[in-house]
Image (tube, rainbow, N blue to C red; front, side):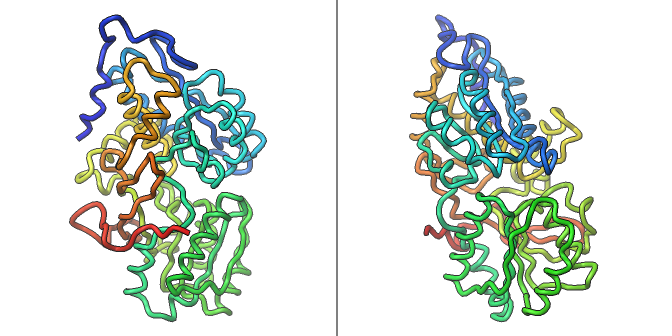
Amino acid sequence: TVANTDSGRTTLPPGGNGGATDVGVTANEIRVGWVGTLTGPVPGLFRGALIGTQAFMAYQNSQGGLFGRRIRVLPADDALDSGKNRAGHLQLKDQVLAFVGSFSVNDDGGIGVLRDCGCPDIGAALTRAHADLPNSFSPQPLKRGWRTGGLRWFKQKYPKEVIEHVAQFVAAVQSAREIAADQRRVMESLGYRIVYSREVQPNETNFTGDVIQMRNRGVRMLVFQGDIGNMARLATAMYQQNFKVDLPHWGNAIYDSNLFKLAPKEAFEGSMLDQVYALFLGEDAGSVPEVALFNQWMKKVDPNQPVDLFSMYGWISARLFVETAQKVGPQLTRAKLLQALRDTGTWNANGMVAPVNIGQKRPADCGFIFTVRDGRFVRVHPTDKPFDCSLGGFMYL
């Protein structure tokens, strides 16, 4: 159910809600900041995260807001630039109670500002130094390591020759480099072997050389830490040159309503992915009501914004903010919000994500496997419940 936000209907308590209790809070309004990539080399790259954040806040405002206060999101664009990311945080830090739903591969830019202001930061920190800030809390915590459930499952299903001939592609940004390095270490500890790897610049268009190299090195499996645009262009090049791998294990960014507008459906046929959040494009709407609620409000707020991984992150970040603020009560302050986040244990975004521990910043140990079949995303395992917690947990490095 979605009833756990209905306490947001709470009207002004006896004696009022305390009025202006902290930065960004008045008797009638709570302002939160969002910093991410809207323009630059890849225009609109993380716009979904802003719309997802706004969608949940719009839903919450429809429920009465928070103790008589409406929530407003103030955005800043970093244009895929660390310096502008810092500038965006600087611009908003004295106007907002907290930062919520921000999404950028250049989120290292805001670290100093967030450290100095002590502002609560609730969103998907991608660089490790950002994730490690004591005032930064993610609905999908980032730790040194990688999830093993899918990797162990694949090892049982595919021959050794596939597991030992892997190509790894990595976006040429620090956050992706850090994540990919951990993924590689965990894969290698489980017996996987990387035989070809390369960093990919934003908006690369020519992947012919990669296809030749992968053929020459006998690549049978592929992993990619990067954005959907580059993945689609590589997949298209492989399809056009009739090069197939047994286990195309693309990054989760391909789970996107725009995927088959960017590449022929045949280019991604048979892709196998493991995931720690429900099939939020709508496939799980019948079993996870939060998925239906998310899609309903995304359409209400911006019917032209494709539902993607980043809009889901915005939505669950906003839910975490609201649920935590409700625990604090009407006398909302930065300090009380941070303490309530530290005190939050197991959390699952009302069923949207596999359970994580917010206060301890522990990633999910559960997940599921899905595939691409004839231009659709289809669950493979488990099919009787959202997540399986027996496949293998998160491996910490």
